[in-house]
Image (cartoon, rainbow, N blue to C red; front, side, top):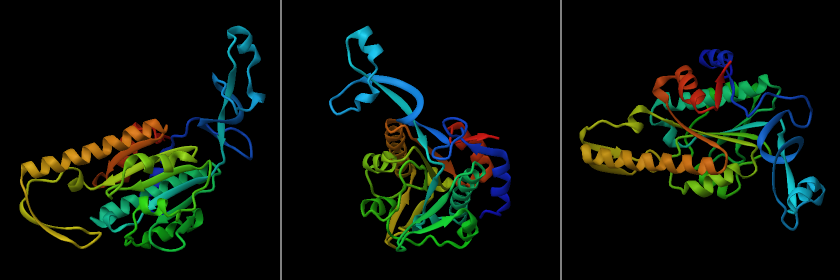
Length: 284
């Protein structure tokens, strides 16, 4: 996918929407949103027992008679990791699987242009979980989406070798049984930046009224006969909207980003519209 024409074109037009431009330094080249130990002052907060007393602001204490701690903006090691969902639900259409792979490859390529060390993890049943380095991205083309273990299950079982202080990108449809709160908290907990990109087909986002239909769960193979009238469609869309709102709310709490894209639009339009509007990407 590294040499995919759409990925190459998008990489020439867009940049990663990181919190600020790269700065010099070998141990941390990109500044994040959390509090850490770099030299850039971020804010004060009240001292609590156990805090590092070396960060006490005695000048603030003299002014307010309150012990305050100086917080500094953390530095991110130039490492980006993409968690690409390769469960069967990603194959509800060939376009969905392809666009998800293109998005994963694009983030890795854009990280490489900043001197980063990107890895794309194929989040599936394979043990150990397969990781692709920048020079191996073309292998994404043939990667099969046939896993039955969801991203939430893999995280719960500690099967994903996540790196601390990484720029973490998750590409998934997020259409699996889970509670968004612990999932987002786990993904964001040790990351410097977390971006979650939900990839849906146009049919999944807004299915038409179709009358009687047989629905097949692509994960389990279970079949259900259902009459897809307006009431059923509206109930489904309400559930999907609640799911997206839950993810967006948990993302805000963790200073992360959650954005939904429609695969049918194509990579360039997705980058120009949803990904740039959400701040995940910006025009180059």
